[in-house]
Length: 53
Image (cartoon, rainbow, N blue to C red; front, side, top):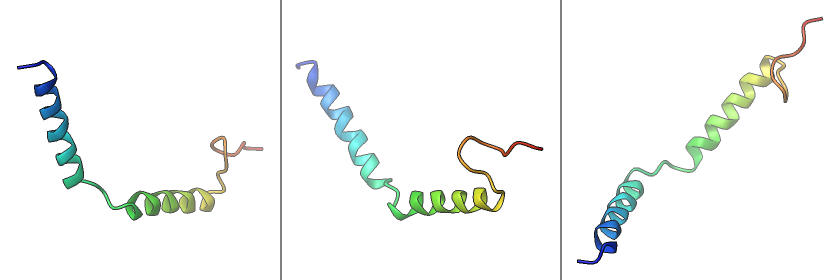
């Protein structure tokens, strides 16, 4: 058996698993929006926490 056959089987197995367990595209987008909303409430912009005067 050529060396590529087991590798191909493993790849196909992984791809089938990934397709079964795929996250809906709206989920990560909603998480990004929520974290941006929380950051905006804390007045945190690019670069981390605001400097304390």
